[in-house]
Length: 378
Image (cartoon, rainbow, N blue to C red; front, side):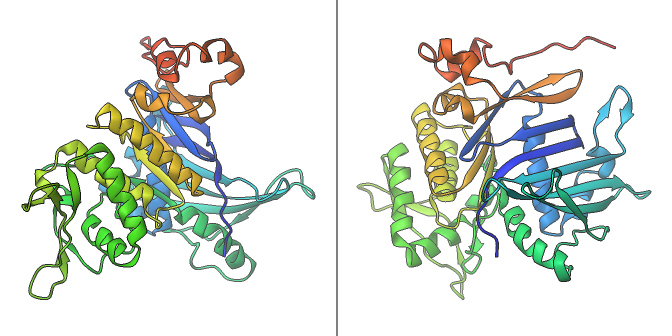
């Protein structure tokens, strides 16, 4: 059984717009900013790729995106032959740390051939980390090991499995949160919140304090909201959908009668306040459709999740959301000659501005970087 370790950094090579990037994460919240097309979403997708590898769904992920060649970086010198993900966890102490490396190569069928390594570094004894290669194949070998490698994998695998990417941007008429879900599908919130009704029903029955904390957070941005109405339906009472009540009314409403922003905030509050939230929560532009007050409340929810020992990674275009964090939380993404690059702003360099300007204002003034950059034709 592993102890909780935050991610120290993620190094990505050869993936989409990313030629070679090392992203150092804050132990609490990392906020990714940058112009459109700088590569924020590709950083998010690299976490998503890691999550699919851990669930032995690599080939499905690659196939859904048109083959491995569609994932590889293409630059002036042509297409890269492989991509790699390197996740290193912060040490429990000053001396030891663990990590995982995955390298994906293209096959003749445009599927992915996966090579993996577990890494361990005891700084007291060795100057460089020890890399233990795993059997290569089409899916991860982490669950098929024996001996010393199995004990090693049992430590690292839960850390990697704790990385989860969530997308709550779909709020259309057939959006996952608006559909029925099985009452039994309630152990963890789906990445698209498709089982949010079943998940909230379990919290209400088993963890009422956590449930009402979520309800209170929603009332803070939607004062008309009273409570959810979560009643199993169907002949076997085995399905449930998201319904709700408004203050001072007897009418019961369904999820389609919520505004887009309110529905997104319900999903975010459920994720960030529930006791079952994953160890590393990754979100792409969670501020979409939110009122400025709701964006401030979203920042508070992210900080609360971090205070509970979770690590959050958020890509955003919102200067208001950025205002709620500190320089150490910020990673600036830029695009240079078609390649994504990451810069961490220095608090010392910005010291003269911090007393007069917010981070959002400094971003708009281009003091942080991450604004539009024009590329010349080769």
